[in-house]
Image (cartoon, rainbow, N blue to C red):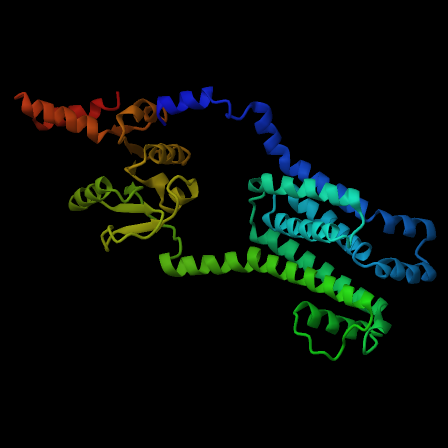
Length: 399
């Protein structure tokens, strides 16, 4: 928050321009459009065949030959195209799950292309460009909503199972035990995707083996992605609630909210507690420094929802007494968004930040270094240090 730092950012040639910032904001839409176009291109040959010949029985039989005659360059591209078209919606919504699935799928396609198992040169080059863009702008895909992740996970799982069941039926005669019905195809798909491999049904031709390999790769990718984006966050939340306690809403009024665990915050709590006042701490994590009998809410004090959970709207005052001036200022800004009218008190640790903190218009500014320096000078020069002088010095820090 120093003036020198702000001036450096203004003069720095690396500071992002308005055009660059606008492009970064739209990067997820551009990448989603690129992935959608890639998916449609990969589905082009299949669409052309269906459009020319129609959905007749003979064409469906020919479709199986199209999908299975050259799996790695044909059917794999078809499945990849389906995934990309669907996941492009998630990329437009900045879904982290969609980013993971598309990134892994791009890596698989590029690996097949580099090993000369895939002859689509132009598509391979375009996928390299998209993969680089996904990596460079990976920070834009940070939405990890459990609901969205669950939807995309279920959708991906359904696609892979459908791919396994239909492929098994169409290639039924190429297995040791011919697959003639959907029940057997579903059983074989689940056993293959889970990598159990009982051995009762196994591929006997090179095309069927390649099909099984692709099914295993896609199955593992979808399972790993679903676990990392849905199950792990759920388990982490349960573990965090177990270790630090579940967030709770405190129904209080006329109390004092302290957003910090600093020495100033703890000493302020003790003095208010001696005077019979109710005090509530907001901490980002449990701390042994806080008295055991103190009311504590674990959360981000700069988040308005956390202040609402602490009944900040009906509090007597919200005090940002941390050691970081920027965080203290953000606490005051969040407190001003509450519907109530609690007083806001902010501590300033660096005198250079005093004017900046005043811009957020707190009701009371407390600068220990300024007050301490003035009191020490008064004592050394023989000036009278009275209660009135002390209060005046404290009040003058907000002018």
